[in-house]
Image (cartoon, rainbow, N blue to C red; front, top):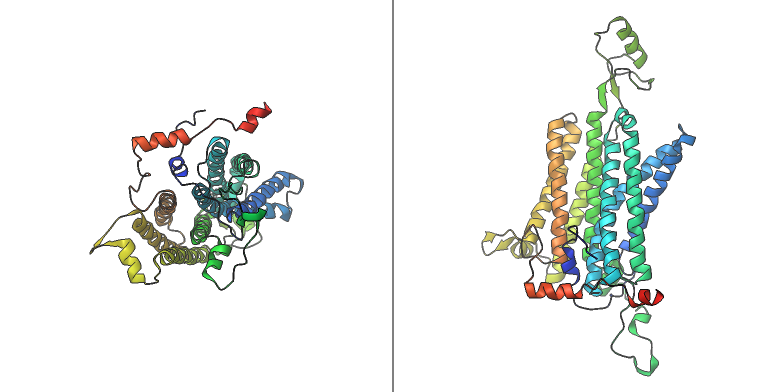
Length: 424
Protein backbone atom coordinates (compact mmCIF):
# COMPACT_ATOMS: atom_id res chain seq x y z
CA UNK A 1 0.00 0.00 0.00
CA UNK A 2 1.38 3.41 -0.99
CA UNK A 3 0.68 6.27 1.41
CA UNK A 4 1.30 8.93 -1.23
CA UNK A 5 2.61 12.50 -0.98
CA UNK A 6 0.51 13.23 2.11
CA UNK A 7 2.76 10.95 4.19
CA UNK A 8 3.92 13.11 7.09
CA UNK A 9 7.54 13.40 8.12
CA UNK A 10 6.75 12.35 11.67
CA UNK A 11 6.81 8.77 10.31
CA UNK A 12 10.60 8.76 10.49
CA UNK A 13 10.39 10.05 14.05
CA UNK A 14 7.91 7.36 15.05
CA UNK A 15 10.00 4.45 13.82
CA UNK A 16 13.30 5.76 15.21
CA UNK A 17 12.56 5.40 18.93
CA UNK A 18 13.82 2.48 20.97
CA UNK A 19 11.55 -0.22 22.27
CA UNK A 20 10.14 0.34 25.77
CA UNK A 21 6.98 -0.15 27.77
CA UNK A 22 4.40 2.54 28.46
CA UNK A 23 5.08 4.25 31.81
CA UNK A 24 2.59 3.77 34.62
CA UNK A 25 0.55 6.91 35.31
CA UNK A 26 -2.58 7.92 37.16
CA UNK A 27 -4.30 8.44 33.78
CA UNK A 28 -3.08 5.88 31.26
CA UNK A 29 -1.68 6.41 28.75
CA UNK A 30 -2.12 10.23 28.83
CA UNK A 31 -4.76 12.95 29.15
CA UNK A 32 -5.61 12.82 25.44
CA UNK A 33 -7.95 9.89 26.06
CA UNK A 34 -9.99 12.10 28.41
CA UNK A 35 -9.90 15.43 26.59
CA UNK A 36 -11.05 14.14 23.21
CA UNK A 37 -14.49 13.13 24.49
CA UNK A 38 -15.58 16.65 25.39
CA UNK A 39 -15.20 18.42 22.03
CA UNK A 40 -16.51 15.41 20.13
CA UNK A 41 -19.59 14.98 22.30
CA UNK A 42 -20.45 18.67 22.59
CA UNK A 43 -19.82 19.46 18.91
CA UNK A 44 -21.75 16.47 17.56
CA UNK A 45 -24.71 17.07 19.87
CA UNK A 46 -24.75 20.74 18.88
CA UNK A 47 -24.88 19.86 15.19
CA UNK A 48 -27.69 17.35 15.81
CA UNK A 49 -29.74 19.96 17.69
CA UNK A 50 -29.10 22.50 14.94
CA UNK A 51 -30.39 20.02 12.34
CA UNK A 52 -33.52 19.51 14.43
CA UNK A 53 -33.88 23.24 14.98
CA UNK A 54 -36.58 23.55 12.31
CA UNK A 55 -38.94 21.96 14.83
CA UNK A 56 -38.34 24.81 17.29
CA UNK A 57 -37.30 27.78 15.11
CA UNK A 58 -37.63 30.36 17.90
CA UNK A 59 -36.67 28.16 20.81
CA UNK A 60 -33.68 28.77 23.05
CA UNK A 61 -32.65 25.23 22.15
CA UNK A 62 -31.10 26.55 18.94
CA UNK A 63 -29.11 29.09 20.93
CA UNK A 64 -27.84 26.28 23.14
CA UNK A 65 -26.97 24.22 20.05
CA UNK A 66 -24.87 27.00 18.57
CA UNK A 67 -23.04 27.53 21.86
CA UNK A 68 -22.30 23.80 21.90
CA UNK A 69 -20.97 23.94 18.33
CA UNK A 70 -18.72 26.88 19.16
CA UNK A 71 -17.39 25.43 22.42
CA UNK A 72 -16.92 21.98 20.89
CA UNK A 73 -14.95 23.40 17.96
CA UNK A 74 -12.69 25.55 20.15
CA UNK A 75 -12.11 22.73 22.65
CA UNK A 76 -10.88 20.62 19.75
CA UNK A 77 -7.73 22.76 19.70
CA UNK A 78 -6.36 21.66 23.11
CA UNK A 79 -7.51 18.15 22.24
CA UNK A 80 -5.35 18.35 19.10
CA UNK A 81 -2.29 19.69 20.96
CA UNK A 82 -2.68 16.94 23.55
CA UNK A 83 -2.85 14.52 20.62
CA UNK A 84 0.56 15.72 19.41
CA UNK A 85 2.00 14.79 22.78
CA UNK A 86 0.09 11.48 22.80
CA UNK A 87 1.54 10.51 19.41
CA UNK A 88 5.10 11.22 20.53
CA UNK A 89 4.42 9.43 23.83
CA UNK A 90 3.28 6.30 22.01
CA UNK A 91 6.17 6.49 19.56
CA UNK A 92 8.59 6.83 22.45
CA UNK A 93 7.30 3.83 24.40
CA UNK A 94 5.79 1.47 21.82
CA UNK A 95 8.07 1.65 18.83
CA UNK A 96 8.16 0.38 16.15
CA UNK A 97 4.65 1.36 15.02
CA UNK A 98 4.07 -0.77 11.95
CA UNK A 99 1.39 -2.46 9.91
CA UNK A 100 -2.26 -1.80 10.67
CA UNK A 101 -1.43 0.13 13.82
CA UNK A 102 0.61 2.62 11.81
CA UNK A 103 -2.07 3.15 9.16
CA UNK A 104 -4.81 3.63 11.71
CA UNK A 105 -2.72 6.18 13.61
CA UNK A 106 -1.82 7.92 10.35
CA UNK A 107 -5.42 8.37 9.25
CA UNK A 108 -6.49 9.31 12.77
CA UNK A 109 -4.01 12.19 12.71
CA UNK A 110 -4.90 13.28 9.17
CA UNK A 111 -8.69 13.14 9.50
CA UNK A 112 -8.85 14.65 12.97
CA UNK A 113 -6.53 17.44 11.87
CA UNK A 114 -8.79 18.25 8.91
CA UNK A 115 -11.88 18.06 11.13
CA UNK A 116 -10.37 20.40 13.73
CA UNK A 117 -9.33 23.01 11.16
CA UNK A 118 -12.72 22.84 9.45
CA UNK A 119 -14.76 22.97 12.65
CA UNK A 120 -12.73 25.85 14.10
CA UNK A 121 -12.87 27.79 10.84
CA UNK A 122 -16.63 27.42 10.39
CA UNK A 123 -17.43 28.10 14.05
CA UNK A 124 -15.14 31.14 14.13
CA UNK A 125 -16.77 32.50 10.97
CA UNK A 126 -20.20 32.04 12.50
CA UNK A 127 -19.12 33.87 15.63
CA UNK A 128 -17.39 36.68 13.72
CA UNK A 129 -20.15 37.30 11.17
CA UNK A 130 -23.01 39.70 11.73
CA UNK A 131 -26.53 38.37 12.07
CA UNK A 132 -27.22 39.40 8.49
CA UNK A 133 -24.26 37.44 7.13
CA UNK A 134 -25.16 34.46 9.28
CA UNK A 135 -28.56 34.31 7.63
CA UNK A 136 -27.07 34.62 4.14
CA UNK A 137 -24.35 32.02 4.75
CA UNK A 138 -26.45 29.61 6.81
CA UNK A 139 -26.40 26.78 4.24
CA UNK A 140 -22.59 26.87 3.65
CA UNK A 141 -22.04 27.02 7.41
CA UNK A 142 -24.29 24.01 7.95
CA UNK A 143 -22.56 22.05 5.18
CA UNK A 144 -19.16 22.87 6.72
CA UNK A 145 -20.34 21.69 10.13
CA UNK A 146 -21.65 18.43 8.66
CA UNK A 147 -18.36 17.86 6.82
CA UNK A 148 -16.39 18.46 10.04
CA UNK A 149 -18.74 16.05 11.82
CA UNK A 150 -18.03 13.37 9.20
CA UNK A 151 -14.26 13.80 9.50
CA UNK A 152 -14.51 13.67 13.29
CA UNK A 153 -16.49 10.42 13.17
CA UNK A 154 -14.20 8.62 10.71
CA UNK A 155 -11.05 9.89 12.40
CA UNK A 156 -12.36 8.79 15.80
CA UNK A 157 -13.10 5.35 14.42
CA UNK A 158 -9.47 4.95 13.34
CA UNK A 159 -8.29 6.14 16.75
CA UNK A 160 -10.58 3.74 18.57
CA UNK A 161 -9.54 0.82 16.40
CA UNK A 162 -5.83 1.34 16.92
CA UNK A 163 -6.31 1.60 20.71
CA UNK A 164 -9.04 -0.91 21.53
CA UNK A 165 -8.33 -3.46 18.80
CA UNK A 166 -4.55 -3.25 18.33
CA UNK A 167 -3.63 -2.12 21.85
CA UNK A 168 -1.77 1.01 20.76
CA UNK A 169 -0.67 3.02 23.80
CA UNK A 170 -2.39 0.74 26.31
CA UNK A 171 -1.12 -2.80 25.76
CA UNK A 172 1.95 -3.67 27.83
CA UNK A 173 4.66 -5.25 25.76
CA UNK A 174 5.88 -8.67 26.93
CA UNK A 175 8.70 -8.60 29.43
CA UNK A 176 11.86 -10.62 28.85
CA UNK A 177 12.14 -11.39 32.56
CA UNK A 178 9.83 -13.89 34.28
CA UNK A 179 8.81 -12.93 37.84
CA UNK A 180 10.03 -15.48 40.39
CA UNK A 181 7.58 -18.00 41.94
CA UNK A 182 4.82 -16.95 39.61
CA UNK A 183 4.52 -13.51 41.18
CA UNK A 184 2.63 -10.80 39.34
CA UNK A 185 4.61 -8.40 37.20
CA UNK A 186 5.17 -4.78 38.15
CA UNK A 187 2.61 -3.62 35.58
CA UNK A 188 -0.19 -5.60 37.23
CA UNK A 189 -0.48 -3.29 40.23
CA UNK A 190 -0.35 0.46 40.75
CA UNK A 191 2.29 1.70 43.15
CA UNK A 192 1.31 3.87 46.08
CA UNK A 193 2.92 7.21 45.22
CA UNK A 194 3.30 9.65 48.14
CA UNK A 195 1.62 12.96 47.39
CA UNK A 196 4.59 14.95 48.65
CA UNK A 197 7.23 13.26 46.51
CA UNK A 198 8.58 14.53 43.21
CA UNK A 199 7.47 11.33 41.54
CA UNK A 200 3.87 12.18 42.42
CA UNK A 201 3.95 15.12 40.00
CA UNK A 202 4.89 12.89 37.10
CA UNK A 203 2.47 10.19 38.24
CA UNK A 204 -0.61 12.39 38.57
CA UNK A 205 0.13 15.03 35.93
CA UNK A 206 1.59 12.52 33.50
CA UNK A 207 4.33 14.75 32.15
CA UNK A 208 5.14 18.45 32.33
CA UNK A 209 5.37 18.54 28.54
CA UNK A 210 1.82 17.24 28.33
CA UNK A 211 0.49 20.00 30.60
CA UNK A 212 2.46 22.60 28.64
CA UNK A 213 0.91 21.53 25.33
CA UNK A 214 -2.64 21.31 26.67
CA UNK A 215 -2.45 24.79 28.21
CA UNK A 216 -1.01 26.12 24.94
CA UNK A 217 -4.00 24.69 23.09
CA UNK A 218 -6.34 26.44 25.54
CA UNK A 219 -4.55 29.74 24.92
CA UNK A 220 -4.93 29.35 21.16
CA UNK A 221 -8.62 28.46 21.50
CA UNK A 222 -9.40 31.54 23.61
CA UNK A 223 -7.37 33.73 21.23
CA UNK A 224 -9.36 32.53 18.21
CA UNK A 225 -12.61 33.15 20.04
CA UNK A 226 -11.45 36.65 21.00
CA UNK A 227 -10.42 37.33 17.40
CA UNK A 228 -13.85 36.30 16.15
CA UNK A 229 -15.52 38.63 18.68
CA UNK A 230 -13.25 41.48 17.58
CA UNK A 231 -14.28 40.96 13.97
CA UNK A 232 -17.95 40.78 14.93
CA UNK A 233 -17.68 44.20 16.56
CA UNK A 234 -16.86 45.63 13.13
CA UNK A 235 -19.22 43.55 11.00
CA UNK A 236 -22.21 44.02 13.31
CA UNK A 237 -22.41 47.80 12.91
CA UNK A 238 -23.79 48.50 9.46
CA UNK A 239 -26.45 50.76 7.90
CA UNK A 240 -29.95 49.36 8.11
CA UNK A 241 -31.35 49.10 4.59
CA UNK A 242 -34.46 47.35 5.80
CA UNK A 243 -33.58 44.09 4.02
CA UNK A 244 -34.18 41.03 6.13
CA UNK A 245 -33.65 42.87 9.40
CA UNK A 246 -35.90 41.98 12.28
CA UNK A 247 -37.44 45.16 13.76
CA UNK A 248 -36.09 46.04 17.14
CA UNK A 249 -37.71 47.91 19.95
CA UNK A 250 -34.54 49.69 21.00
CA UNK A 251 -33.72 53.11 19.68
CA UNK A 252 -30.42 53.93 18.08
CA UNK A 253 -28.17 56.71 19.41
CA UNK A 254 -29.69 59.22 16.93
CA UNK A 255 -33.06 58.83 18.63
CA UNK A 256 -34.78 57.07 15.72
CA UNK A 257 -36.13 53.59 16.17
CA UNK A 258 -36.16 51.04 13.36
CA UNK A 259 -39.76 51.90 12.46
CA UNK A 260 -39.10 55.65 12.67
CA UNK A 261 -36.15 55.37 10.30
CA UNK A 262 -38.21 53.35 7.84
CA UNK A 263 -40.97 55.99 7.96
CA UNK A 264 -38.49 58.81 7.28
CA UNK A 265 -36.99 56.94 4.32
CA UNK A 266 -40.48 56.43 2.86
CA UNK A 267 -40.73 60.22 2.44
CA UNK A 268 -37.07 61.00 1.81
CA UNK A 269 -35.10 58.30 0.01
CA UNK A 270 -31.84 60.18 0.62
CA UNK A 271 -32.26 60.15 4.39
CA UNK A 272 -29.32 58.52 6.14
CA UNK A 273 -30.24 55.01 7.23
CA UNK A 274 -30.31 54.11 10.88
CA UNK A 275 -27.43 51.93 12.10
CA UNK A 276 -28.09 48.41 13.25
CA UNK A 277 -26.31 47.50 16.49
CA UNK A 278 -26.32 43.81 17.29
CA UNK A 279 -25.38 42.01 20.47
CA UNK A 280 -21.58 41.87 20.73
CA UNK A 281 -19.71 40.34 23.65
CA UNK A 282 -16.64 42.31 24.76
CA UNK A 283 -13.56 40.91 23.09
CA UNK A 284 -11.01 42.74 25.20
CA UNK A 285 -11.51 40.61 28.30
CA UNK A 286 -11.10 37.44 26.23
CA UNK A 287 -7.83 38.78 24.82
CA UNK A 288 -6.66 39.41 28.37
CA UNK A 289 -7.72 35.90 29.35
CA UNK A 290 -5.75 34.54 26.41
CA UNK A 291 -2.71 36.55 27.52
CA UNK A 292 -2.96 35.07 31.02
CA UNK A 293 -3.12 31.54 29.60
CA UNK A 294 -0.12 32.32 27.37
CA UNK A 295 1.78 33.32 30.51
CA UNK A 296 0.75 30.03 32.14
CA UNK A 297 2.01 28.20 29.04
CA UNK A 298 5.34 30.01 29.30
CA UNK A 299 5.54 29.08 32.98
CA UNK A 300 5.02 25.45 32.01
CA UNK A 301 7.81 25.68 29.45
CA UNK A 302 10.16 27.17 32.02
CA UNK A 303 9.16 24.41 34.44
CA UNK A 304 10.13 21.82 31.84
CA UNK A 305 13.57 23.36 31.45
CA UNK A 306 14.07 23.75 35.22
CA UNK A 307 13.06 20.13 35.83
CA UNK A 308 15.65 18.92 33.32
CA UNK A 309 18.45 21.27 34.40
CA UNK A 310 17.86 21.19 38.14
CA UNK A 311 17.82 24.98 38.55
CA UNK A 312 15.13 27.67 38.57
CA UNK A 313 17.41 30.56 37.63
CA UNK A 314 15.97 32.77 34.83
CA UNK A 315 19.50 33.90 34.03
CA UNK A 316 20.63 30.33 33.54
CA UNK A 317 17.61 29.72 31.34
CA UNK A 318 18.46 32.71 29.17
CA UNK A 319 22.10 31.65 28.77
CA UNK A 320 21.21 28.02 28.07
CA UNK A 321 18.38 28.55 25.57
CA UNK A 322 18.90 31.98 24.05
CA UNK A 323 22.67 32.49 24.08
CA UNK A 324 25.80 30.84 22.78
CA UNK A 325 28.73 32.61 24.34
CA UNK A 326 27.91 36.31 24.06
CA UNK A 327 25.69 36.01 21.00
CA UNK A 328 22.02 35.30 20.57
CA UNK A 329 21.27 32.06 18.75
CA UNK A 330 18.38 31.07 16.50
CA UNK A 331 17.81 27.45 17.45
CA UNK A 332 14.43 25.75 17.47
CA UNK A 333 14.12 26.22 21.23
CA UNK A 334 15.11 29.90 21.17
CA UNK A 335 12.77 30.71 18.28
CA UNK A 336 10.04 28.86 20.17
CA UNK A 337 10.61 31.28 23.06
CA UNK A 338 10.68 34.35 20.79
CA UNK A 339 7.44 33.35 19.06
CA UNK A 340 5.83 32.81 22.47
CA UNK A 341 6.83 36.34 23.49
CA UNK A 342 5.39 37.65 20.21
CA UNK A 343 2.08 35.88 20.86
CA UNK A 344 1.89 37.42 24.33
CA UNK A 345 2.54 40.92 22.97
CA UNK A 346 0.03 40.46 20.15
CA UNK A 347 -2.71 39.39 22.56
CA UNK A 348 -2.10 42.53 24.65
CA UNK A 349 -2.10 44.76 21.56
CA UNK A 350 -5.34 43.22 20.34
CA UNK A 351 -6.86 43.63 23.81
CA UNK A 352 -6.10 47.35 23.59
CA UNK A 353 -7.55 47.55 20.09
CA UNK A 354 -10.71 45.76 21.22
CA UNK A 355 -11.09 48.36 23.97
CA UNK A 356 -10.13 51.62 22.28
CA UNK A 357 -9.96 51.01 18.51
CA UNK A 358 -13.00 48.84 17.86
CA UNK A 359 -13.60 50.04 14.27
CA UNK A 360 -10.01 49.88 12.99
CA UNK A 361 -10.54 47.16 10.40
CA UNK A 362 -7.11 47.50 8.76
CA UNK A 363 -5.22 47.36 12.05
CA UNK A 364 -7.27 44.39 13.23
CA UNK A 365 -6.59 42.56 9.95
CA UNK A 366 -2.83 43.08 10.22
CA UNK A 367 -2.56 41.91 13.82
CA UNK A 368 -5.02 39.05 13.24
CA UNK A 369 -2.84 37.68 10.43
CA UNK A 370 0.26 38.08 12.58
CA UNK A 371 -1.16 36.20 15.57
CA UNK A 372 -2.54 33.39 13.40
CA UNK A 373 0.86 32.96 11.73
CA UNK A 374 2.57 33.06 15.13
CA UNK A 375 0.27 30.35 16.53
CA UNK A 376 0.82 28.14 13.48
CA UNK A 377 4.60 28.62 13.76
CA UNK A 378 4.52 27.85 17.48
CA UNK A 379 2.68 24.58 16.90
CA UNK A 380 5.13 23.60 14.16
CA UNK A 381 8.14 24.39 16.35
CA UNK A 382 6.58 22.36 19.14
CA UNK A 383 6.23 19.41 16.76
CA UNK A 384 9.89 19.71 15.75
CA UNK A 385 11.01 19.84 19.38
CA UNK A 386 8.76 16.96 20.38
CA UNK A 387 9.51 14.55 17.54
CA UNK A 388 13.03 15.61 16.59
CA UNK A 389 15.35 17.73 18.78
CA UNK A 390 16.42 21.30 19.43
CA UNK A 391 19.00 21.41 16.65
CA UNK A 392 18.40 21.59 12.94
CA UNK A 393 16.32 23.47 10.40
CA UNK A 394 13.26 25.47 11.41
CA UNK A 395 11.34 24.23 8.39
CA UNK A 396 11.77 20.46 8.30
CA UNK A 397 12.89 17.46 10.31
CA UNK A 398 16.55 16.57 10.36
CA UNK A 399 17.58 14.51 7.40
CA UNK A 400 18.62 10.92 8.06
CA UNK A 401 21.38 9.14 6.26
CA UNK A 402 20.57 6.88 3.33
CA UNK A 403 21.57 3.79 5.27
CA UNK A 404 19.41 4.75 8.23
CA UNK A 405 16.47 5.64 5.97
CA UNK A 406 16.60 2.21 4.35
CA UNK A 407 16.73 0.60 7.77
CA UNK A 408 13.66 2.57 8.85
CA UNK A 409 11.78 1.69 5.67
CA UNK A 410 12.46 -1.99 6.31
CA UNK A 411 10.74 -1.61 9.70
CA UNK A 412 7.57 -0.18 8.16
CA UNK A 413 5.81 -3.50 7.74
CA UNK A 414 2.44 -2.72 6.13
CA UNK A 415 1.36 -6.31 5.72
CA UNK A 416 -1.74 -7.36 7.69
CA UNK A 417 -1.18 -9.03 11.04
CA UNK A 418 -1.21 -12.84 11.32
CA UNK A 419 -4.62 -12.93 12.97
CA UNK A 420 -6.15 -11.17 9.94
CA UNK A 421 -4.56 -13.67 7.57
CA UNK A 422 -5.72 -16.59 9.71
CA UNK A 423 -9.25 -15.25 9.76
CA UNK A 424 -9.29 -15.19 5.98
